[in-house]
Length: 317
Image (cartoon, rainbow, N blue to C red):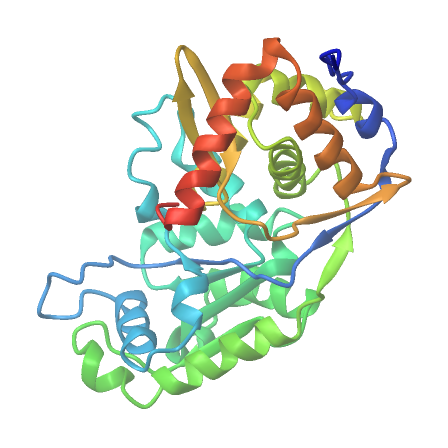
């Protein structure tokens, strides 16, 4: 008779994480996220309510891939109801950190506030592109002489001026819309494909959390916080939840329950961080799945992952 072999695999998740060097890691920027700020967007209105709305309608009408890369703060309407954020500016600040490019259409008091917020930040002001009315750009105003000139001194082609009339948007902006698209695409093409990891950049930190989830397939929020410490990120739980909320809204991760356990799992297989050090991502993934599969204590998590894999095959995810 053959004796039944009881296979057991050790939990090597922290062992693999210990091989990561964040100082030698790089952030992958090859899949850009564009954060577009400005006036009201409302596709239900027959009359175009803002320059930003007109630009979005134009990009969508010509079936440009750019539309899939644009993010609006309005898409996150439940930000306050989830009690993750208490302040809109803090919320937009975190979105801006995750974004590759921040485009501000300078047409409203809110856009002016956003410009003031972002232009003072040394990380964010390098990502800025501003669309402004040509008359306002030429005028000797505080905005033109202050923030806009400051941005132009930091980086060329960050301020773009076009003729428009807010009382007659469609007619006054018609010729400028293709130019706005060209200028935005040019700004995107001039971006680096990667940059060194910076622990002071919350966008970079959020991508590390995404990669940890992607490697280990299904994690509780407390585990995500613990594993981030193993690679040198000592994050408070409130901040972890805040960044996970944003990753969820950007559809990089999602949550699901198995019994009473809530797991975060990846929705994409896109690289966001290339870890430095002696870390082997594939080896870590295989070792982790072996641990889940052959240890009774992880049966709930393993069954949850099997359920995800089944949905992926059926095209439900």
